Length: 310
Image 1 (tube, one colour):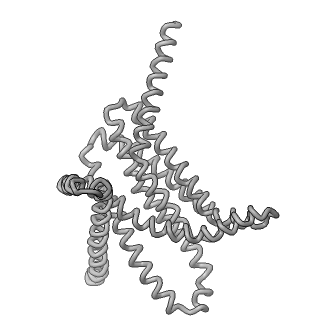
Image 2 (cartoon, rainbow, N blue to C red):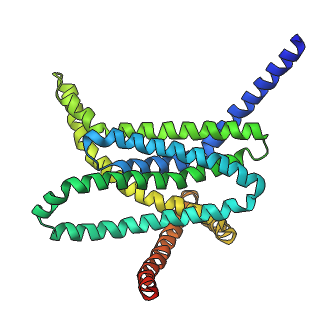
Image 3 (tube, helix red, strand yellow):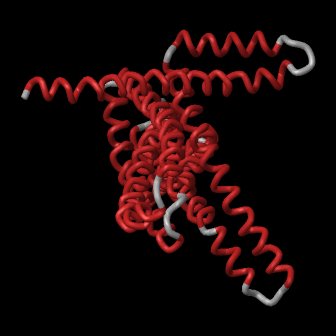
């Protein structure tokens, strides 16, 4: 009896060691995606009313947990029954991210023109409705983007534990999914409340605290603007990276390009390290433009088809 209990404890200890080791490996491999995830989601939830920032982050965090509750078992089932489906599904997600980035750029350009021509009275009349719709759109967009990034994180983690037992796979995937969600949205909550921290410090008697508070207030809008740019760039980088890794000839082209660039004198190693990022970015932009054109053409053709059919 005692011997059986010791064997069971030994098996559990071995399993926990495997889970810890594989979780550490998976966390390292997904660190790049985590950075993009942080930039994207901080940018996605920025711009809402100050008193609604944390509730919006909480809504998106709950949506992210739901995404992972769907993705983890789905990834395990697909990898077991139809492993060949993972790459095509990732490519579709990558194309969607690139499309979102291209659409965001076009939308921001149109929004600037509309803002210049819009009257103050019209903006005030629509303010209340727009704020509610704006918040809902932010939440939906952030959850939608999170779904694709979470899918990539889950697939990368799944590749790390491909040779492990099913129990270890489930434990590692669940642990990484939970840690990524808490980590990302914990940081997002801190980022969106920087200005509130600045206001709090300004009200203190200490000159040093007031100086830090003024610095945070000046830094907050700059950070949000930077995150907006970084978030858009990240859409192209992540989407282009997914497509690049999933398409064999494109992946080989990237590897060969890195080798050729590294042979250059002086800055070869630095340029070699930057080459995959630049190629992923270029692939992301081209993919985004192509998908945007296809969607635009289809959206113009579809209403005519419906009208003709009626």
